[in-house]
Amino acid sequence: MTVDVASKSPGLVSLFNDPNQVITLDANFLIPPDRQISSVKGIPFSLFQTCWLDPIFVTFPQLAIHEAVHDELVSLDIKAFIQAKVNESPPQIIIHKDSELTAVEYMLRDSIEAKIFPYTRYDPQINNREERGEVKTLAYIAVQKPKRF
View 1: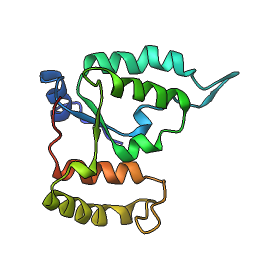
View 2: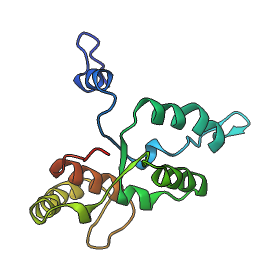
View 3: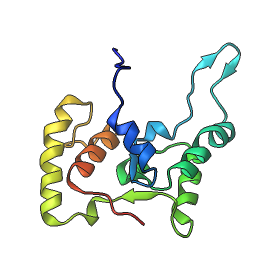
View 4: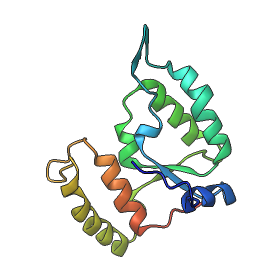
């Protein structure tokens, strides 16, 4: 991968200029790394939360996930963390729901999903879990400007 250090990343500049914009995350962002490093296996969720999740949620107050990503969360720790964010008043995470799309947006979302999924391991015919969250998230954000709290 080539990194262009001669020009600024417009996405990163946008985040620096407006950390309050809605940022939609994939499940992988919420899952602690689980790689064997010498005798230590993975990172405990409590450490991951303290060093990664809590600072990100403080720095970027408009984080969001699609409902398909929410359904993909399998770890009890991650589920409890996200549910606590949902239950806060006001909620500290936005859950994008396809049911909140207008009929036209839903049609567009389905059309975009149909164009995206062949390049992934997700198959809407069987609704398998592999890459479903990524496909549904991308299709959703392509048609719906996320609402702020």
